[in-house]
Image 1 (cartoon, rainbow, N blue to C red):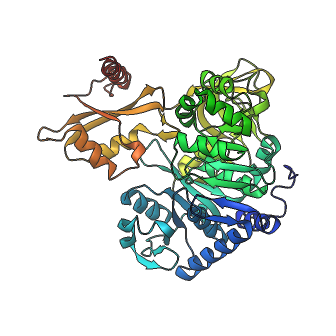
Image 2 (cartoon, helix red, strand yellow):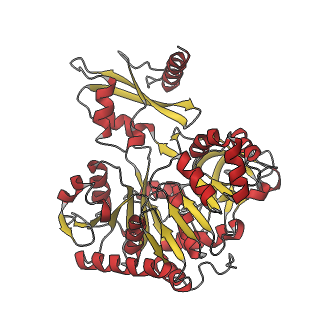
Image 3 (tube, helix red, strand yellow):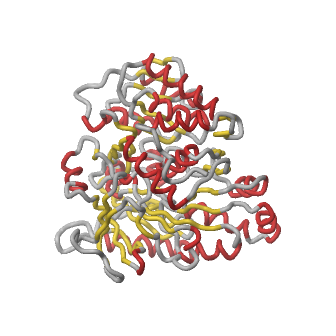
Length: 508
C-alpha cells in the first residue's frame, strides 16, 4: 500500500511526480471523462506530446490553461508543468476579458485551449494559432514578476482592491502538502474516485494529484448532475468524491428515495465524501450520515493560498466532531494572533497558519505579500474557536467575502465592474443566505439620471465581463446609497434592506 511516507518520494517537481506515477502504474486506468480514457502509460505519452507542442510554440513564459472537466484539460495542465511552465488555470466558461487580464498580469506567452478551441473560437483571435490547440500571445510588455520563475501555478482569487489576487504557488508547496494529506486520508492503489469539482479549482487539483500519485483512477464529470452522480455511484464502487456543501444539498433529495439508498448500500458507494470549499453545517452532514451510514464524511479547511488543506477532520471522527474542521495536518503550525502561545480550548481569534504549502506570494503585489506572510505565518482572515484536543471550528470571517456555492466573491470586485457601466452611478453588493448555495449575490445600484437599463440588462452586460458566479442573482435600484455617521456607505443597513426584500419576495 502507498503510504504518506513515499507518495512524493524521488520527485523534485510536479512533472517528475506525475512521471514517476505513470511509470509505476503503467497499465492501470488513470483518467476518464465518458468520452476518453487513458491508462497511466497513455497519460504519460499525452503529457509528453503536449509539452513538446508548448516548447515548439514559445521558448518560455506562463501558459493560460482553459480547463473543462475533460481528460484533455488535465493533460494540458500537466503538459505545462512538463514543459517547465507556470500554469494559469481558468474555467472554460470565463469571458474573454478575464482571459486577457490573466494573460496580461502573468505576462503569459501561450493560451492553451486544446479541444476547447472550437467552442471558444472567441479566444483564438487573441494571437497566432499553433498545433496542440495553442494560441501564441503577443509578446508581453515589461518584466515578469520574479515570483513566477519556476512556479507551478498562478490561481486568481477575489481581492479586496476590486482586482482578483494572483496566488503564486511553487511545486514545493504541493509536493510538501500531498504527504500530509495522505497521512490522514489514506488514498489507496486501484481505488476509483470521481471529480465533481471544476478542474480549475485547487481543491480538485490536489485531489487529482493525490489520486494519481497513489495509483487510483479518476472519472471527471463535465457538469454536476445529482442524477448522473447517483448513477455513477451505483454502477461500480466509488471510493470517494470531493464536493462542496452546495453539491451535497442538491444530492440529498435523491437520497430520500429508499431504493436509491439501498442500491448505494449494496455497492458500498461512495466510500466517503470529502467536503470543503465552504462550511459544512452539522445539520447537513448529519442528515447525509443518517441516509447513507455506510458513507463517511471527511471535512477539510484551507485556502487557495495554502495550496491544499491545513486542517482536516477524518471520516472516522466526523460523527463525534461534526461541529469542527478537525486538527492541523502534521506539518502545519498555527496560532490565533499570539505566536508564542499555544491556543487552548475556548480561545477565539483570527487564524494564522504556517506550513510548507503556503504561497510564494501575490503576483505583482509585494506589499500584500508582506502583509500576508511577512511574519512567517499566513493570515487567513477567518475567525475560529479552538476546541478540545486541538480541533478548531470556523466562526466567521474577518472580512466581507461572499461565499456562493464555494465560489468566493469579494464585493468590491463586482461593484467596480458594475460601476464601469455608463448607466451605473454607484453599486453596492452583499450576500443573502440561501439554503442551497449558502449565499446568493445581490447588488444595489444607483442609476445615472439618463440610464434606461433594467436589472436584466445590467446582469447581461456584466456576464460578458466577469465569471458567471460573480453576476448578481438580483439587482435592486435605489435613488441614493444611505451613509453612516462617517459618511461611508452604510453596508449594514443595505444588507438588512436587501435581505428583507428577498424574504418578502420568497413569502409572496
